[in-house]
Length: 134
Image (cartoon, rainbow, N blue to C red; front, side, top):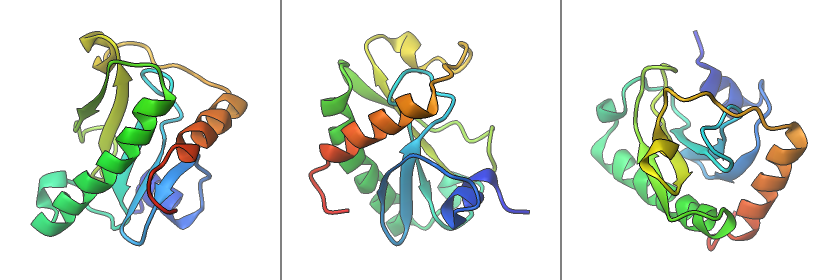
């Protein structure tokens, strides 16, 4: 059975895309910890991130780095936190979370519920600051 992320990759479920290439996709989390929270996924469906091929895992981290640089420029924050939890969706993914305190990456706190307009605006702002071709 396809994961929700595979359905996003295939276009069955819409998303607020930030960056995409032939192997990876970055998009806004629709239930973010903080505004600007991004998910980075491999397009192939693989459950556990450390089951990924070494070269693909390294490439995904470099892809995430490009996204995080634009994200930090777009969202007022001290750092972009990174988290790999892997329990909530059976598809490898990296959380990129703008943070000012360690609590901003606390996954037990209530999630935000931004409107589609807020998500669209944030995605546009981050995409406009990407230093790579999309």
